[in-house]
Image (cartoon, rainbow, N blue to C red; front, side, top):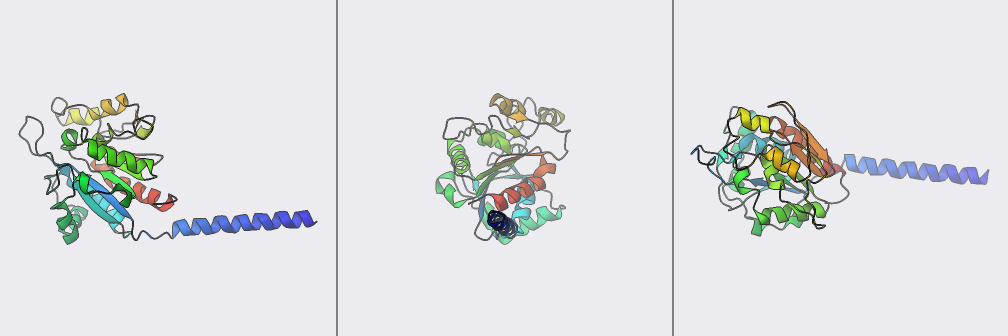
Length: 258
């Protein structure tokens, strides 16, 4: 009888501890949590002369999700300053809110450079898409190092559309590629072909991710497609941007430490 009482008591304690942890996670405040957005500063689509840069909605929609939770978002680009913006649609109310926010404007007009960033200040890094990312993300060793270090230290790495171009050369401390063996979503070969960009971009993102060992999952053009694998969040296109933000937030609320 005594053993039964002890067993029931231990089970009760375990249940209460579990409930307390769950309650803490659900009510976890996001105050003081910081996320770093990486913006492309590349202005032109190859030799076409057509302007590009970072894509507005792919920053605005994740920002909205995080901002509404009290999370601070900083902005970085390879060369700092004010990088060029693409997809400038202010008829989208979230784009407009983002663009007209004075703190956002101040930040994107004066983006940080990689050498100004202490990545341990951040819980997550998000690579914003836009065709420009295909030129200035992949070979930037400083940015790749920041992302790898963050992931190695329990942080979250996210990217949307062409943003995963910033992941193709990210390595972890064991020497492996971050995307190797992970399921990912990114701008597809079919979407590049539909936009007439197959022979303009320096490489096809879908193919490069597969070369790095990623399990790339494609959805039909322009449809929402987001994959989460451990602490890696990736989305296929602009339609996926909000869900990328929601998945980042979900991970922020459940990871054990920032």
